[in-house]
Image (cartoon, rainbow, N blue to C red; front, side, top):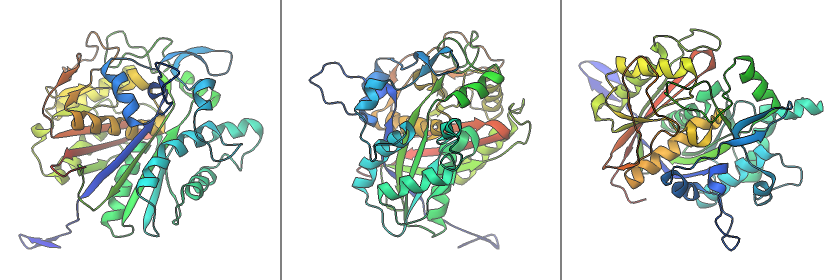
Length: 391
């Protein structure tokens, strides 16, 4: 507690990110048969530096070929599995989380926060409704990864991954847990594709965030994982917030109000000047309405000159994993002092000015802003700082 001008203010210990991992098709590149087939956060870095993506023509069911970032059969053979009947999503979650939990063995005070939008929804096609429920997936992952606590599920549209990290932070600050593993994942299915196609939101070409020729998103599948605690570490969560603008069941607020309020509240907790943000990792889905909404919001916030990228052109839109996946890449950008360009972007196609990163660049950076937006008016924002602590 702290008394400020006669008002008692609750003070919380800062929370740090200590470990990270991601598994996506982009990190599955192997240049020779002699190389070990390992997919982790570091295997993605050279691909990003070379400007490569993993969005190719894929068969995702419904007799439709679309550009998407999808694991092929050969790549899945090299993924470690914990059971013969493991689904692809379970494999991705397991392979992403295992190195993290091996390094930070869960105790009776360690939380598992799982983010996903659809989970094993494909079980519905097999008339296995009970198996498709998210708690079934969460408890299965908690058991195989050695957690002693009941898993916490975050399924809040496409802000799920970033929101899960915020929830973990708050639970630790409230004293309910000592530390937490945040795990996020989603895969492409006919169910997911049909939903986005119903909105005419799927591009038949690789997506082009913020570009004048953008016509929709590219789907992707991925998993991401981070470990957080009160112990000082390399990355500090300065502030976060999640505001629902309640504008529409699927369309974002045309004024960006929910995103604006999320960033303002995150900045207030961070207690920094908003101009001290070095770069922005935007949601940037490449849909007409999302990119326009973000451009309006960032201009309202005075962030139009801050370097900004969307990573959807590399990984596709990975739904519930997107916020956490892109946060991990943002940590990598801080770690290596690198600004990753927005793949697919050529000409600004929104009504407000933005400083879109177009070329790979190197700079000394201290903090970045991660944003996410999703169906139902959901928005989230987080500001993360690189500390002087040795990783």
